[in-house]
Amino acid sequence: MIRLMKKGRMAAKVIVVLTLLLSGVHLFQKKAEAAEFNLPFNTEVHGVLTKGITSNTYNLVINEAGRLTLDLTSYVDKNTYIQLLDNNNKKIWDTRTTGSSLNPAKLNKWVDLEPGKYFLKINGNDYWDENTGKYILKATFEKAGNNEIEPNNGVIEAQAITFNQLVTGFLSWNDTIDMYKITLKKPGRLGIDISSYVDSYTYIRLYDNNNKEIFSTNTEGSSKNPAKYMKTIDLEPGNYYLNINGDSLWDRNTGKYQLKTTFTAANSNETEPNNGIVEAQTLPFNKTITGFLSWNDTEDYYKISLPKKGKVTFTSVSYVESYTNFQLINNRNEVVVNNYATGSSKNPAKYSNTIVLEKGIYYFRVYSDLKSNTGKYTLNISSPVLLAPLTVDKVSDKSTVVKGKTAKNQEVVVKASGKVYKKKANSAGAYSIKIPKQKAGTKIEVSTKNKYGTKKVTITVLDRTAPKAPTIKKATSTFVEGKGEKAATVYVYKGSKLVGKATVSKKGTFKAKISKQKKGTSLVVYAKDKAGNKSVGRTVKVK
Image: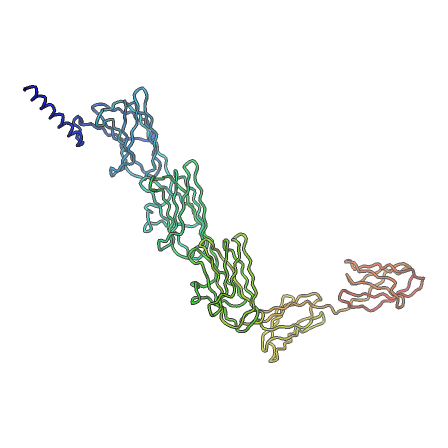
């Protein structure tokens, strides 16, 4: 009976112990002792874990952002527990090594950190064993050398960026996001150039001022094999935000990166907004407009007022990447022309279309189907029927006036030999403008201008002056030699019969072979220039 009672009490004790163990209470845990030290950089520190001192804490002070690397060689028998904590006691690392005094464990681990105070804890105690032994610890630190301005972790704190200046940024365990503010004062092309030394992935996003994502991408590289990312995007004036971060659902990717932005203005002279018929910009005839299609402005409308029926020509040089679409819409919203051209900023597309249109109001639309098809373009519209009529009479080297016809009371401008002469036509449209005599071959430009553009006519001054009679140096039975007007043709006649001819050289000399003549024969020599002007004849006798 007594034995049964003892056995019952023993079983009850076992049940209590098992219940406590299952509830998480460690019946045999001993009070752990700890020691605290400062951990210098680039110095081996020897430590020991004993039954009396089961944990050592090392203080680390980092004065600027960079990479902390810890090397640990542990001779502790079995497990060594290593924790790295920030100043708020938040775990950065929590790992362990397994080794022994005969087979020491090795640990090499790094982390990118911001300036601050950190704590490294090395512990040999767990719920089951007291792991003891020696260890060697060494901490090294490499400065990031970043020049970004912290904090810049969101739109409110975003660092304003200057074009063409290199920014070195740094993503760390405790700062995984950098935000930059980009301000465009004009429409144009933004360039983004990033070299990322971040280990693994770098995430890059660009937002507009309404927090709408323009693009999102990532690069993969490392501190030894940096990733390279370059992108250009056409944008309207405004504020934009560039987000560079290393945080993902699985990892914190950290390291330094280099950022450079550039900007090329579109130098467009279109008037925005002009994104529909209501806002359409008036397109004058014979005046080239430079427009711009961008990520946030993919279409432009232009209004055309045609006062009378006639041929109209639309021309464009498009630097838009890939496709540029062109539409002509009439006043009933019907598409009259629907074309496209393909080109790029390096190989611009050239577009030209001529169409006969009735009098009325039209709208010319330039647009892109995709936000990636962006860039600048030029646009010009012309119609010869709208220009002032202009005719010019022939002008010779003997003329002292330029005559012709144009619209009544229309001003006519004459440009000759670097000088300008102006005069209005009479009520019948006739004009006569005095000018000095001009040399044969001189180009004269005559123009008129109205609200639809300028019409130009270029004429060449005709040669109406006969060359001088050739001078004769020698006349033999077989040739005549002498001087004359350069490039003129010299003719030698015996009576009405042509016996020889030659072209005057650049030096002004000639030598004309003739059929054999008797001594004392009279010959007549004259010159004719390219314009057909003939000199007087010169008589010479064969000697």
